[in-house]
Image 1 (tube, rainbow, N blue to C red):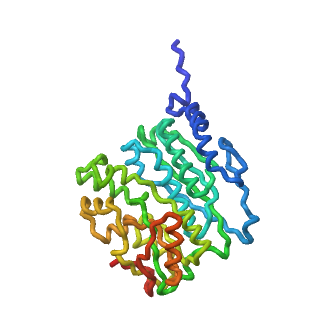
Image 2 (image 1 turned 45 degrees about the horizontal axis):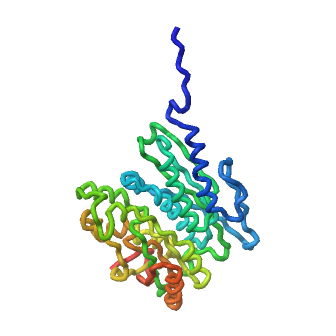
Image 3 (image 1 turned 120 degrees about the vertical axis):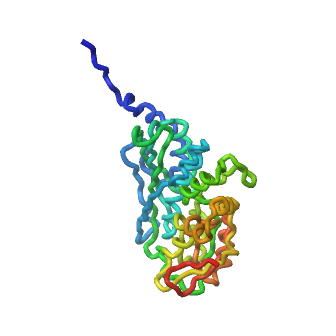
Length: 343
């Protein structure tokens, strides 16, 4: 009688030993993000974080979650995995930031068909880099091997962030008034939005990620990591009254700025004041994209909008510039029905 083969989890495509080795490899990256409030180390069932309540009289927690979408496909195709983690952190912490909150801690979820240690290690190193930029502790995460769900070589990412803000200092746009200035903070490129269209443009144009664009490769410019605006904007909040903040993600300027405007107000933006990196010109040209579609799909060079009074605009730009941001007035608030006109 033939003896039946004894199956293991590895036979099914899941390597527990590889997962354990990854934990050892990423320990130093995780430790580099540690804050004083972190009470636990990597490998536990849950991350422990002591809220800094001594600094607040009426604290409110702010949470956010996001991914990086199909930008992952370009990272995999280019074999560049050490910056996509920065994108993941940026998409979450920038969302939390617009409420005026300080990001406290971050968790990630990495799912793949088969764990490739070098790739996963590079991704987590990028996540840790992003957390250091944002001042957030990387206190936990999850790695999942799911053969049959993902194709070989594919992986997906999700991130989760929690921040804190004094209730009386929450920024919700309610103080915005006609005549206020809209300041645009420069983006590094498309950030992490519109990449399904980006990939479609590459497909129909016949162009390649290795084609030259400006001083580098097209693929490298498309993979430029999303800017993390936490430290500059939080410095601005300490010095200037900010009335509204908008993270310019999917939907572009046309749909994200209205999200933070009260009823009865809209915005008029001056297209001549918006400097677009060359990659956006490339996308518009090779995709034959109309201007309106560009502004509702891509950030078009503006990654964050700050609304301040006209009297505070010069000071705000000075503070942001001192913190390393390229910022300029790109328009103003006016009466309207929560719409944005770009002309």
